[in-house]
Image 1 (spheres, one colour):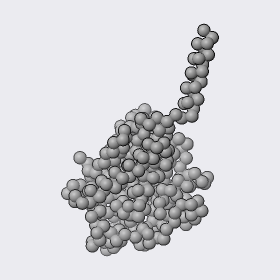
Image 2 (tube, helix red, strand yellow):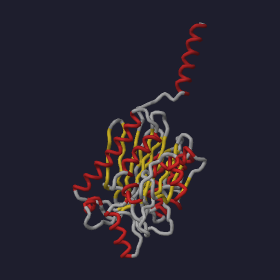
Image 3 (cartoon, one colour):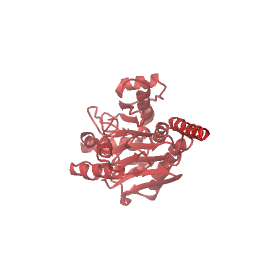
Image 4 (cartoon, one colour):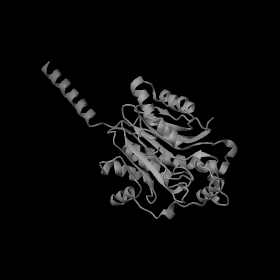
Length: 343
């Protein structure tokens, strides 16, 4: 009897230690991405540019999921995934960032750790190759949440984040977009086509250009990240929702991780990312219901356009959007799926 009791206690102690150490469970690892939402229809999409987007989205999924599969954290996966999209001229982030009215490329980004609720963001940066890495540095290597402009760039450089000349971000297509819109004297959201550049295969009509990623790792931790070049022809130091924690980016292990894409002002006013988490926390709603309530009802009712990707602690995915389309995809159980259109 004493021996049986001893063995039982030993078993329970071993189980407790294993749980405390966070024994990895690879059955739920999940990665979700978006590359912007807006007027994305088959009517304005050629086979060539559709192929280009699908290939790059799939590459991003494979890179991020690969990190998770090897035991990497959700934070590592989000950062690596967003690097792929920031380094591509296809998306309005990093290399593909749009131009401001002054002819500059000003970028914003944010990351949040669902385990600790720590977050970091940067805004209006012009020399940081991968703003998402600068956002992570702010979170992990400073006591602050947000840094902007020159200060953010100095901090990033001090902490080993790659700095480039502003000319790195120049693309002919984005520059042509600025010239066209300045001629029309109105503000336009992201892509509206260039003229002669070969990059024009990547333009597809008005779109809200942001990239984002949410991930669940083998240790049960969620993370979210968002990166953007903002709004074409933006003025006066405008900052959108991407670097605003709770608006365009949010993560909490107890509820979900969210990254948004859309008309930033509406997402800020409605605190979209946190609102989804709040519905889950206070009403006990599943992630799909909560995300649809905010994106398809609240935002629509208030005139806001765009979408989100959301992921809960059990690996359940939601990708609602109220625009014509949204570049999006997810990977779980080793299978990647990529979507573009509403249907």
